[in-house]
Image 1 (tube, rainbow, N blue to C red):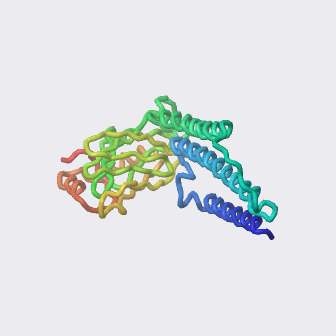
Image 2: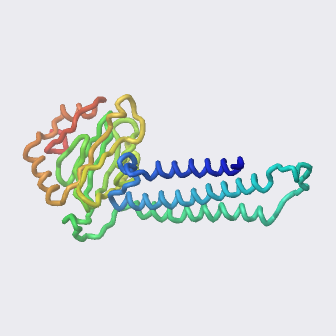
Image 3: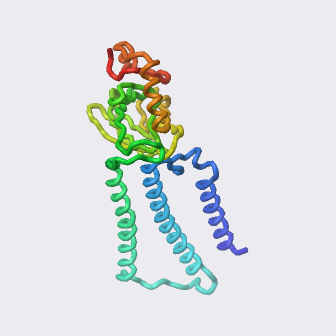
Length: 280
């Protein structure tokens, strides 16, 4: 086999193995962004696929041109004395390789901007979903402490630590802030990430298609306890969510000033729940 043929075969083998690794059967387990479980994550997933497709077009075009040039203009006994002519420029080709990148940037920018603005606010329609939940957003305040996550339910009057329960099929409006260093709130299977910043109230809405447990975590290093800043998002039916709220109110202690001070102090705590959201 000629050296060029061996190089081509090696290239195709590397590309094929890479694609197999990226699209393996267990990819969703290790990369939940590739297995969206809600409308926000799904919109972002399609944007990722579109961006990847554009990237592959560019990569394949570069490889095709590269191998065409090394094959067509390779050194052979017939052209060993060939001297290429002096060329100052080519207006046609310079226009082509200027216009094509502009087209690619526009093709990437338009859907990116459209999806970004679409996901700024949750839908406002007040209709029942298949899970029995309302499309009116559930508001949850998220406070990033060192090194724990505190979730306050203003309408329900309860608080949880390091886990959050939500109704499946209902948008959830997370109000994000921080009582320590800046952090980043991220639930990969349900959508993108947003900052938790001291003194600021940033917003992120997510929604789960169906009941299940989805792992969330901090996406920004914030000190020695950063690795423990994980939490579970438990999506349940609307009826089960209402029962859970009542159970928390009836069985869990009220939030005391001592417990609130413990949450504000640096440290790692287990999952906790309180029947009130304000220190008593």
